[in-house]
Length: 260
Ligand SMILES: [Fe+2]
Image 1 (cartoon, rainbow, N blue to C red):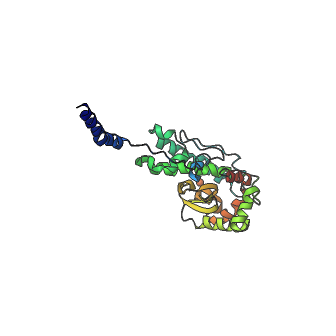
Image 2 (image 1 turned 30 degrees about the horizontal axis):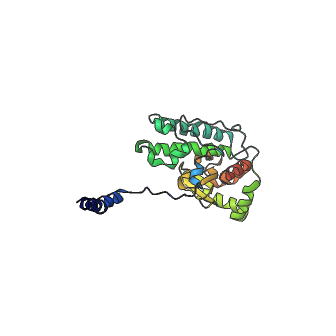
Image 3 (image 1 turned 90 degrees about the vertical axis):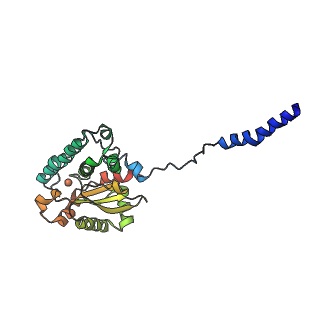
């Protein structure tokens, strides 16, 4: 009798309980180690506005020009510089602050992070953020790319990379100017680093920044009419040609190395 019950219990355990226990065991999969090499987009979060830091979104502040309004007359007159900085750039700053004033969670983010993820910005302010965060970022970069001591041939690593990619500095200038002249309406022409780590010339419409397309902006020229109209009138090509007289190659080298 005892033997009967012992065999019955063993039978129940092996045919019913054990399969249930085995089926309920659901091991947690162990994730495979993934390479952690940052992408261009990840790393660009750190250093787009400046070679070593991002741009605060709130309160956005108009950065002071690193030179006087009349210091770049080799290419741009003082009145244009004054209006461009103290009126146009200032309005992007004010409009960005206005757009974000009711959104504390967005205020904590950088301008770069807002532009990289516009879908996370409420629809009712998305276009305003796109235009004005972009305008603030683009102009913050632009002022640093010029210098009263600028111009001449490129120097440092960027000179070699330009020669390697475009054949020569003259060929690069020609291609950059042609792209800037061909940008329809208002926008920017840029030298960027693409996701393949190569130099490339691109243009953006309005105040869009190349990070929105996965590129890191190394240098760029503003081809909105407000950047040149007082002196050059409708002659955008002349402005593009003269702009090289104030290009700040040391700063462009710093930017070009920030992703290396
Ligand atoms: Fe501008």
